[in-house]
Length: 558
Image (cartoon, rainbow, N blue to C red; front, side):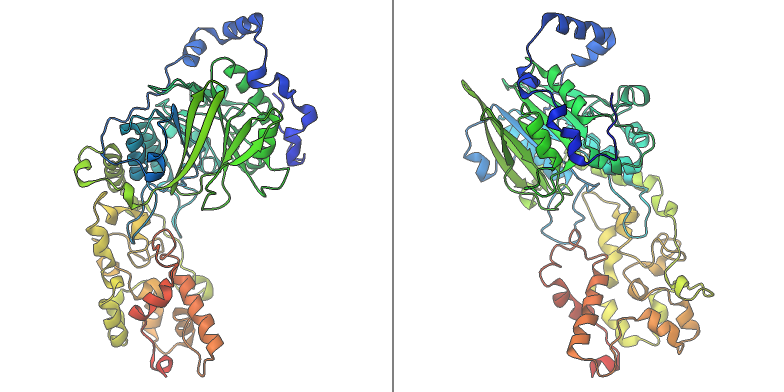
């Protein structure tokens, strides 16, 4: 198999002169008996059995009791409902620190359940980038593999037929990622058709294609996936070897002949500028007109509401879909079989609070159960205690010093007024919100939650757990001002005054300087009050919340 040349321009992977003629590609290939017999005989006993293995049943057993959204309730019942997701980036559930938040595997399950409870035949595919890209803040990505495994288990519960792999999985290492799930469970099937060493290094873990026909549907679906040249070059995993995506797609389409009515491509490549002819997904659509649907990487958090339609020479359309980031949206493609071909309708569904599990549906809910098991595994593994502690940036500013965290009570004597403001604020009770959280519980044992609800977690001398470092629970003074031991030793030392309060107002501060200073404070607050955790921050959040915790010095009050 030819390996893509990293030095060749992107479009070279799809050069028309190197492509099979559209008349001899995919569903238009002539069926030659001898070739077919050769293919079958080459598969051999074991391989043939795997090729013909029954598809994922895709039947969700748990009944949630939610209705179709209004937009879909107006549709005629589809012959097939294809669910499209991707780029979850490890977001299992909304964190719950603010409302209304969007996304999460529980709500996705409920949405698919609503479709199935309405009698719609459903199958689902995921583009990949299911894994968490990196740890939060100073934390390492120690929860990445665990989250991936529970995500895959949830997708299996939802009846996913196939998923692919992206940069997030490669960053954790394909050997680790595949060993975490696919090595032990073939469903959903992992597809990367142009991973050239899949048979030798990842046997029975990565496949070229999947065939599925959901119960009650007359439509047979062929699914394949490739990693495009742009993204394959970014994958630094030394084990992963990628061949020509062009050759892999030609082979996949040939295998779909007479076996499929609908062909789906999971393309790990970004759209780029839509008008750009060098866009890899568009080029793939033009080179392989037999794909009906291409799901590709989305550069933006928020996806477009409609597919990009590429019109083929024979009048058919290939629909290119992007689905956004962090599991906030689900793409729903309704497909109807008619005497003249397939008809399509697309709906982009946000997973808002209307998809929360009704109270009666919580017991035995498979995804809620998975999330509880995830929380218990994090606690059982003592990931809090295993979190690596890095050096606080203060140490770089004053190399000879080793500042440590002392706790907010040590600040009270000299900063009594500021302490009162803090004690009565939400910051002063941040730990308890974790301890009281439900569905799932045990969030006070989860490093990624604890990070923004304690003092100094992830830094040397910072919070470790509620037993060993009880004085560092809650979002205390040092969460914003940094470790205070050196300031405590010498309260008049201007070096530490400046380090611990870089946002202090200057004497005779101008309106412009005030605006700049407050903007810097706003940016710092967003290390925890980001758009995922505090969805209301984007609506003048700082302006509304800062007055509740502001504790200016006498100079700043003037």
